[in-house]
Image (cartoon, rainbow, N blue to C red; front, side, top):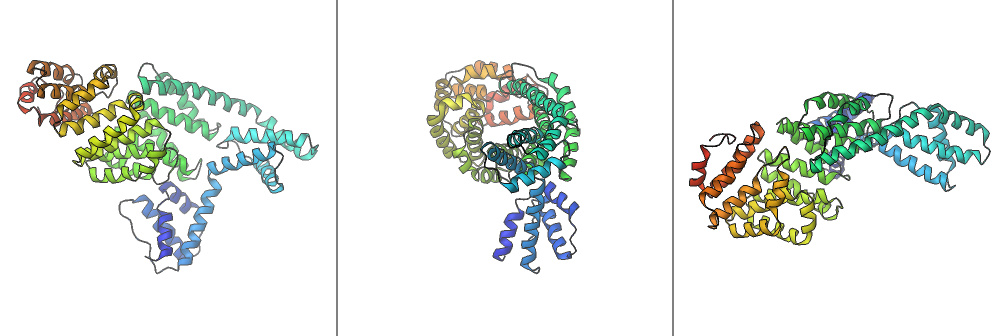
Length: 476
């Protein structure tokens, strides 16, 4: 492939299906070859696992033209770029360094404003700052026009502020339930739905409402009500409404979560791969969840390759939740690729450096993977030492109230204690049966079965005796 087409291919691989759908809807190319290029970009974006190389028979300048055209058209509708521009202009206004061309563009946007803008609150506050700037300089004509805008949208501004503040209050309940499972958040569902469908409200508040609704669905394991919401916003993105690459990748990530909970793992993986096409603040979080899907799809090699590509971001992130999740999934990827010693060493080294943080964030995920690496090597005594030193059984008891709880750590402890001669058969039986009859959900039965089969390699005779008394381990 020629260098120029390689560069174009790398650029095209960063594009997203909703972007190319929008571009096709607005193009008016008279040159059929340029249109063919755009159609092929759209095909490759939507069929990410069957890439078709770009043909060298078309003049490379046409590829360059299409690239420039794509960048310009997407830049025009990018709400994040607009927010950055507003922030820069506001700083210039406050510091009295605003340039004539900045003023000209701002005045034009105020005159042509159509409510609601995505970042309406920011635009209103920018306009108010500019109004002060004009007043003290006695620029009467511009000041009157800007003042009329402020008066016209004052009530909408106050309403958007109030909604934003209420969403913040809702978030405390919703995220609090996710983290600690000690409060309710379903009472926010109706109001957030009303906010999401309120077309008179700014896009930022509406999208924030959708994100919170997704959290509620996850908290209660109720996802059907989200389908209509996602289809609605899907149509907006295809039309270039409320667009930015950041919002699109977040949308794809939320669809990953939605499809994974419907057990539609192929769809979940598809959206997960799209979610990591652009690197932003949440990139590591998106990688973690994609890797989790790939592991569920029994694609351990691809999962390991995917997670290794995010190693740089994992080292520098300040988000400890994502950092420790990354480490836990990396250990699990090594386990699933039978690299148990490497998994053990990686976990041990990280735990020494970040013990306090591990015990605060994603400890169950981390220690489940760490103990699995030890179990697969038959290091039962070290398993017990890790469990005792980190008081995992005490923490696990508090963790049992979670809807998706799995007794991984407790059962690992039972096997290790039995193999070390500390527990009798009746002790192991009691521990296994205490959890194995808790749930009738199909997903949980599958998870219990997978865990049970993992333990079976170590205490097969004992598990055979106990299995007849189980209700949730399918196949027994």
